[in-house]
Amino acid sequence: MTEQEAIAKFMDYLANVKNYSSNTVLSYHKDIQEFLEFIHSEKMAPSLLSIRNNRVCKNYISYLSSSNLASTSISRKLSSLRTFYSYFCKVERMKSNPAALANTPKLPEHDIVILEPNEVAEIIDYAESGEKLTKAQKRYAPLTRLRDVAVLVLLLGTGIRVSECVGLDLTHFDFKNNTFTVIRKGGKENRIYFGEEVKLALFDYLEQRSNITPVEGHENALFLSMQNRRITVRAVENLVKKYASVVTTLKKITPHKLRSTYGTTLYRETGDIYLVADVLGHKDVNTTRKHYAALEEDRRRQAAKVVTLREKRE
Image 1 (tube, rainbow, N blue to C red):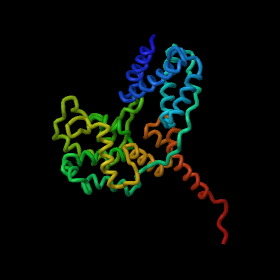
Image 2: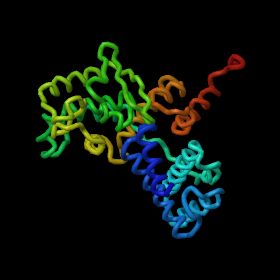
Image 3: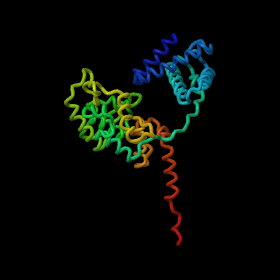
Protein backbone atom coordinates (compact mmCIF):
# COMPACT_ATOMS: atom_id res chain seq x y z
CA MET A 1 0.00 0.00 0.00
CA THR A 2 1.42 3.38 -1.02
CA GLU A 3 1.33 6.36 1.32
CA GLN A 4 -1.37 8.09 -0.71
CA GLU A 5 -3.44 4.90 -0.75
CA ALA A 6 -3.09 4.69 3.03
CA ILE A 7 -4.21 8.30 3.41
CA ALA A 8 -7.14 7.74 1.06
CA LYS A 9 -8.18 4.65 3.03
CA PHE A 10 -8.07 6.63 6.27
CA MET A 11 -10.11 9.48 4.75
CA ASP A 12 -12.72 7.00 3.57
CA TYR A 13 -12.91 5.60 7.11
CA LEU A 14 -13.45 9.07 8.60
CA ALA A 15 -16.11 10.01 6.06
CA ASN A 16 -18.08 6.78 5.75
CA VAL A 17 -17.57 4.98 9.06
CA LYS A 18 -17.07 7.83 11.53
CA ASN A 19 -19.43 10.09 9.53
CA TYR A 20 -17.21 13.12 9.99
CA SER A 21 -18.09 16.28 8.08
CA SER A 22 -16.25 17.11 4.86
CA ASN A 23 -14.48 20.03 6.58
CA THR A 24 -13.23 17.76 9.38
CA VAL A 25 -12.00 15.16 6.89
CA LEU A 26 -10.16 17.87 4.94
CA SER A 27 -8.49 19.06 8.17
CA TYR A 28 -7.25 15.53 8.91
CA HIS A 29 -6.00 15.21 5.33
CA LYS A 30 -4.06 18.47 5.60
CA ASP A 31 -2.46 17.43 8.91
CA ILE A 32 -1.38 14.01 7.62
CA GLN A 33 0.01 15.49 4.39
CA GLU A 34 2.07 18.03 6.33
CA PHE A 35 3.52 15.26 8.49
CA LEU A 36 4.30 13.24 5.35
CA GLU A 37 6.18 16.19 3.86
CA PHE A 38 8.13 16.57 7.11
CA ILE A 39 9.34 12.97 7.29
CA HIS A 40 10.37 13.07 3.64
CA SER A 41 12.14 16.43 3.80
CA GLU A 42 13.98 15.46 7.00
CA LYS A 43 14.48 11.86 5.86
CA MET A 44 13.06 10.70 9.17
CA ALA A 45 11.42 7.53 7.82
CA PRO A 46 10.96 5.71 4.51
CA SER A 47 7.17 5.99 4.67
CA LEU A 48 4.21 6.83 6.89
CA LEU A 49 3.54 3.21 7.86
CA SER A 50 7.17 2.28 8.46
CA ILE A 51 7.58 4.33 11.67
CA ARG A 52 8.21 2.02 14.63
CA ASN A 53 8.79 4.39 17.59
CA ASN A 54 7.74 7.82 18.82
CA ARG A 55 11.04 9.54 18.04
CA VAL A 56 9.81 10.79 14.66
CA CYS A 57 6.62 12.26 16.12
CA LYS A 58 8.55 13.89 18.96
CA ASN A 59 10.89 15.49 16.42
CA TYR A 60 7.87 16.68 14.46
CA ILE A 61 6.41 18.33 17.57
CA SER A 62 9.75 20.03 18.22
CA TYR A 63 9.83 21.23 14.62
CA LEU A 64 6.31 22.67 14.90
CA SER A 65 7.18 24.36 18.20
CA SER A 66 10.25 25.99 16.68
CA SER A 67 7.99 27.37 13.92
CA ASN A 68 6.12 29.41 16.55
CA LEU A 69 2.92 27.53 15.85
CA ALA A 70 0.24 27.95 18.52
CA SER A 71 0.06 25.14 21.06
CA THR A 72 -3.60 24.56 20.15
CA SER A 73 -2.63 23.94 16.51
CA ILE A 74 0.23 21.61 17.49
CA SER A 75 -2.11 19.70 19.78
CA ARG A 76 -4.63 19.28 16.98
CA LYS A 77 -2.01 18.03 14.52
CA LEU A 78 -0.74 15.50 17.06
CA SER A 79 -4.32 14.35 17.66
CA SER A 80 -4.72 13.81 13.91
CA LEU A 81 -1.59 11.64 13.84
CA ARG A 82 -2.76 9.60 16.82
CA THR A 83 -6.11 8.95 15.14
CA PHE A 84 -4.38 8.06 11.86
CA TYR A 85 -2.03 5.52 13.42
CA SER A 86 -4.72 4.20 15.77
CA TYR A 87 -6.75 3.29 12.69
CA PHE A 88 -3.88 1.36 11.09
CA CYS A 89 -3.24 -0.45 14.37
CA LYS A 90 -6.91 -1.35 14.40
CA VAL A 91 -6.77 -2.85 10.89
CA GLU A 92 -3.50 -4.61 11.85
CA ARG A 93 -1.21 -2.79 9.43
CA MET A 94 0.88 -1.55 12.36
CA LYS A 95 1.71 -3.07 15.77
CA SER A 96 1.91 0.14 17.79
CA ASN A 97 0.92 3.79 17.56
CA PRO A 98 4.10 5.91 17.18
CA ALA A 99 2.21 9.10 18.10
CA ALA A 100 0.68 7.70 21.29
CA LEU A 101 3.56 8.63 23.61
CA ALA A 102 4.45 11.98 22.07
CA ASN A 103 3.73 14.69 24.64
CA THR A 104 0.85 17.05 23.92
CA PRO A 105 1.83 20.72 24.37
CA LYS A 106 0.26 22.34 27.42
CA LEU A 107 -2.66 24.44 26.30
CA PRO A 108 -3.17 27.92 27.72
CA GLU A 109 -6.06 28.44 30.12
CA HIS A 110 -8.81 30.70 28.81
CA ASP A 111 -11.70 32.29 30.65
CA ILE A 112 -15.11 31.33 29.33
CA VAL A 113 -16.55 34.19 27.26
CA ILE A 114 -20.32 34.29 27.59
CA LEU A 115 -23.25 36.67 27.39
CA GLU A 116 -24.64 37.77 30.74
CA PRO A 117 -28.42 37.40 31.29
CA ASN A 118 -29.12 41.05 30.44
CA GLU A 119 -27.04 40.71 27.25
CA VAL A 120 -28.95 37.58 26.25
CA ALA A 121 -32.22 39.51 26.54
CA GLU A 122 -30.77 42.46 24.63
CA ILE A 123 -29.43 40.46 21.69
CA ILE A 124 -32.86 38.87 21.17
CA ASP A 125 -34.63 42.21 21.61
CA TYR A 126 -32.41 43.89 19.03
CA ALA A 127 -32.93 41.03 16.57
CA GLU A 128 -36.70 41.41 16.99
CA SER A 129 -36.78 45.19 16.74
CA GLY A 130 -34.00 45.79 14.24
CA GLU A 131 -32.78 48.73 16.30
CA LYS A 132 -29.25 50.00 15.76
CA LEU A 133 -28.84 48.08 12.51
CA THR A 134 -27.32 49.85 9.52
CA LYS A 135 -29.55 51.17 6.74
CA ALA A 136 -28.49 48.29 4.50
CA GLN A 137 -29.24 45.73 7.22
CA LYS A 138 -32.64 47.30 7.94
CA ARG A 139 -33.53 47.00 4.25
CA TYR A 140 -33.40 43.20 4.50
CA ALA A 141 -34.71 42.95 8.08
CA PRO A 142 -38.33 42.18 7.12
CA LEU A 143 -37.10 39.13 5.20
CA THR A 144 -34.63 37.84 7.78
CA ARG A 145 -35.91 39.06 11.17
CA LEU A 146 -38.00 36.02 12.12
CA ARG A 147 -35.32 33.61 10.91
CA ASP A 148 -32.58 35.45 12.78
CA VAL A 149 -34.57 35.51 16.02
CA ALA A 150 -35.32 31.79 15.66
CA VAL A 151 -31.64 30.97 15.10
CA LEU A 152 -30.49 33.03 18.10
CA VAL A 153 -33.18 31.68 20.43
CA LEU A 154 -32.50 28.11 19.32
CA LEU A 155 -28.74 28.42 19.90
CA LEU A 156 -29.16 30.18 23.24
CA GLY A 157 -32.01 27.92 24.36
CA THR A 158 -30.51 24.52 23.55
CA GLY A 159 -26.72 24.91 23.32
CA ILE A 160 -26.45 23.04 20.02
CA ARG A 161 -23.39 23.49 17.81
CA VAL A 162 -23.60 25.78 14.80
CA SER A 163 -22.98 22.79 12.49
CA GLU A 164 -25.90 20.99 14.12
CA CYS A 165 -28.08 24.08 13.71
CA VAL A 166 -27.51 24.46 9.97
CA GLY A 167 -28.02 20.71 9.47
CA LEU A 168 -31.53 20.72 10.95
CA ASP A 169 -34.41 19.57 8.76
CA LEU A 170 -38.12 20.22 9.18
CA THR A 171 -38.65 16.52 9.79
CA HIS A 172 -36.30 16.55 12.80
CA PHE A 173 -38.90 18.34 14.95
CA ASP A 174 -41.64 16.99 17.18
CA PHE A 175 -43.54 20.05 18.41
CA LYS A 176 -46.02 17.95 20.36
CA ASN A 177 -43.21 16.90 22.73
CA ASN A 178 -40.95 19.95 22.16
CA THR A 179 -38.03 17.88 20.88
CA PHE A 180 -35.81 17.63 17.83
CA THR A 181 -33.00 15.33 16.78
CA VAL A 182 -29.45 16.36 15.90
CA ILE A 183 -26.54 14.42 14.45
CA ARG A 184 -23.67 14.88 16.89
CA LYS A 185 -19.94 14.57 16.19
CA GLY A 186 -19.18 11.01 15.13
CA GLY A 187 -22.65 10.55 13.62
CA LYS A 188 -24.50 9.83 16.87
CA GLU A 189 -28.14 10.92 16.88
CA ASN A 190 -29.44 12.74 19.98
CA ARG A 191 -32.85 14.02 21.04
CA ILE A 192 -32.86 17.61 22.30
CA TYR A 193 -35.65 19.16 24.36
CA PHE A 194 -36.58 22.83 24.08
CA GLY A 195 -38.75 25.29 26.00
CA GLU A 196 -41.69 27.48 25.07
CA GLU A 197 -39.56 30.48 24.08
CA VAL A 198 -37.78 28.36 21.47
CA LYS A 199 -41.08 26.88 20.31
CA LEU A 200 -42.73 30.29 19.80
CA ALA A 201 -39.72 31.68 17.90
CA LEU A 202 -39.70 28.64 15.62
CA PHE A 203 -43.45 28.85 15.01
CA ASP A 204 -43.17 32.51 14.02
CA TYR A 205 -40.38 31.70 11.57
CA LEU A 206 -42.07 28.58 10.17
CA GLU A 207 -45.18 30.56 9.34
CA GLN A 208 -43.06 32.87 7.18
CA ARG A 209 -41.04 29.96 5.79
CA SER A 210 -44.22 28.23 4.57
CA ASN A 211 -44.55 31.00 1.97
CA ILE A 212 -40.99 30.50 0.66
CA THR A 213 -40.17 28.16 -2.21
CA PRO A 214 -36.74 26.60 -1.51
CA VAL A 215 -34.25 25.79 -4.25
CA GLU A 216 -34.46 22.19 -5.42
CA GLY A 217 -32.56 19.94 -3.02
CA HIS A 218 -33.09 22.32 -0.09
CA GLU A 219 -36.81 21.73 0.46
CA ASN A 220 -36.39 20.06 3.85
CA ALA A 221 -33.85 22.49 5.35
CA LEU A 222 -35.16 24.30 8.42
CA PHE A 223 -33.22 27.54 8.04
CA LEU A 224 -32.96 29.08 4.58
CA SER A 225 -30.66 31.78 3.25
CA MET A 226 -31.74 34.80 1.22
CA GLN A 227 -31.10 32.62 -1.82
CA ASN A 228 -33.60 30.04 -0.45
CA ARG A 229 -30.88 27.47 0.12
CA ARG A 230 -29.89 25.78 3.38
CA ILE A 231 -28.18 28.39 5.52
CA THR A 232 -24.41 27.96 5.94
CA VAL A 233 -22.20 28.00 9.02
CA ARG A 234 -20.58 31.21 7.81
CA ALA A 235 -23.98 32.89 7.46
CA VAL A 236 -24.92 31.98 11.05
CA GLU A 237 -21.54 33.25 12.28
CA ASN A 238 -22.14 36.57 10.53
CA LEU A 239 -25.70 36.70 11.88
CA VAL A 240 -24.50 36.25 15.48
CA LYS A 241 -21.72 38.80 14.99
CA LYS A 242 -24.18 41.36 13.59
CA TYR A 243 -26.45 41.37 16.64
CA ALA A 244 -23.78 40.70 19.28
CA SER A 245 -21.77 43.73 18.15
CA VAL A 246 -24.75 45.91 19.06
CA VAL A 247 -24.85 44.46 22.58
CA THR A 248 -21.13 44.33 23.40
CA THR A 249 -17.93 45.45 21.72
CA LEU A 250 -15.67 44.07 24.46
CA LYS A 251 -16.47 40.41 23.83
CA LYS A 252 -15.98 38.47 20.63
CA ILE A 253 -19.27 36.59 20.48
CA THR A 254 -19.54 33.61 18.13
CA PRO A 255 -22.10 30.78 17.87
CA HIS A 256 -19.81 28.72 20.12
CA LYS A 257 -19.95 31.47 22.76
CA LEU A 258 -23.75 31.20 22.67
CA ARG A 259 -23.29 27.47 23.34
CA SER A 260 -21.00 28.33 26.27
CA THR A 261 -23.61 30.80 27.52
CA TYR A 262 -26.24 28.04 27.56
CA GLY A 263 -23.89 25.56 29.25
CA THR A 264 -22.92 28.10 31.92
CA THR A 265 -26.55 29.02 32.62
CA LEU A 266 -27.60 25.38 32.83
CA TYR A 267 -24.75 24.55 35.22
CA ARG A 268 -25.47 27.56 37.43
CA GLU A 269 -29.14 26.60 37.64
CA THR A 270 -28.74 22.84 38.17
CA GLY A 271 -25.22 22.31 39.53
CA ASP A 272 -25.27 19.01 37.61
CA ILE A 273 -22.10 18.69 35.51
CA TYR A 274 -23.26 15.32 34.14
CA LEU A 275 -26.50 16.83 32.88
CA VAL A 276 -24.58 19.66 31.20
CA ALA A 277 -22.21 17.16 29.55
CA ASP A 278 -25.14 15.08 28.30
CA VAL A 279 -27.14 18.01 26.93
CA LEU A 280 -24.12 19.56 25.21
CA GLY A 281 -23.19 16.22 23.67
CA HIS A 282 -19.77 15.87 25.32
CA LYS A 283 -18.57 12.26 25.16
CA ASP A 284 -16.45 12.71 28.29
CA VAL A 285 -17.66 14.65 31.34
CA ASN A 286 -14.04 15.72 31.93
CA THR A 287 -14.32 17.82 28.78
CA THR A 288 -17.21 19.65 30.42
CA ARG A 289 -15.34 20.00 33.71
CA LYS A 290 -12.39 21.54 31.90
CA HIS A 291 -14.61 24.22 30.33
CA TYR A 292 -16.53 24.99 33.51
CA ALA A 293 -13.73 24.59 36.06
CA ALA A 294 -14.12 28.15 37.33
CA LEU A 295 -17.80 27.58 38.07
CA GLU A 296 -16.99 24.36 39.92
CA GLU A 297 -14.49 26.31 42.01
CA ASP A 298 -17.22 28.80 42.91
CA ARG A 299 -19.53 25.98 43.97
CA ARG A 300 -16.82 24.44 46.15
CA ARG A 301 -16.22 27.84 47.73
CA GLN A 302 -19.93 28.14 48.48
CA ALA A 303 -19.94 24.64 49.99
CA ALA A 304 -17.61 25.83 52.74
CA LYS A 305 -20.28 28.28 53.91
CA VAL A 306 -23.20 25.87 53.83
CA VAL A 307 -22.29 23.45 56.62
CA THR A 308 -22.69 24.92 60.13
CA LEU A 309 -21.10 23.00 63.01
CA ARG A 310 -22.48 25.05 65.88
CA GLU A 311 -25.06 27.75 66.31
CA LYS A 312 -23.63 31.24 66.22
CA ARG A 313 -22.86 32.55 69.69
CA GLU A 314 -24.44 35.75 70.92
